[in-house]
Amino acid sequence: MRCLLIVSLSALCVIACSNDRIVYSYVVVKPSVEDSEMNKWRPVMRVTYRVGESTVISEVAGLLDKYEACSIKDKNNWQCEYEDGTGKNMFGFSDGRYWKAPNLG
Image (tube, rainbow, N blue to C red):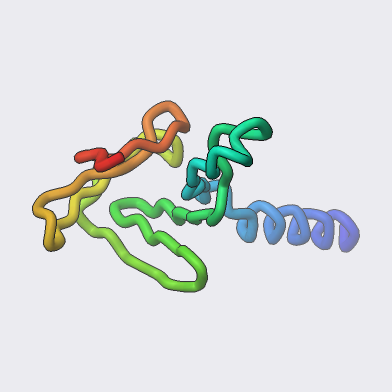
């Protein structure tokens, strides 16, 4: 009985501590002409998104931003809105693929 309790608590801890609500996107750059033979695009920075019930927290190089104007279905399908000096912006994931609007290139 005691072993069953220990195994159950261990399994619960692993399930509770796992974070399956994290997704990633990558900032990419196009290499110079000399390097273009190897790859068209090169990832330079990973962006981590922690998807909550109604908020998303992004982390880039240790800097955190919290977005509260979000519509979240699941970790692979959500969108958030924010305003900055360029106006109203949106970003998110659709079927596990990152997107943003307006897309400024």
